[in-house]
Length: 101
Picture 1: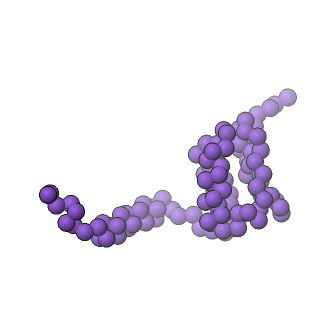
Picture 2: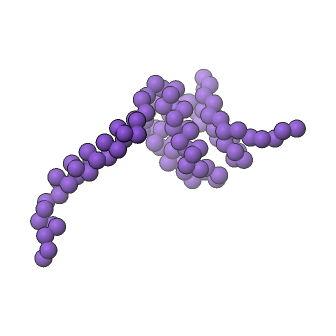
Picture 3: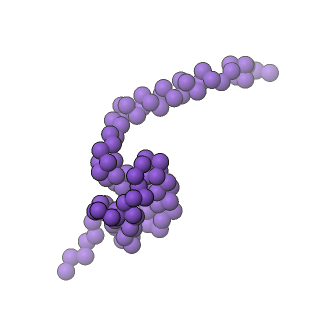
């Protein structure tokens, strides 16, 4: 008998079930993940789950985004947004704090 476990994120009418590797299945009520903010909350909770890995969290996030029809940023868009945020934050910091005293 083959006991190989596969990674799965199953979304049905009531629950989101996560099955990853040797971890116990995690069942989350689907109604608890209706917005991106709630998704962030669940990702935060799952980071402390025994056996949870970054790759598993990525698979979970991608499945929820696909299910809701939310667009995932392309890698080049993500870099652009990060650069834009850094540029904006540099503008907000007065240059005088960088001057030697």
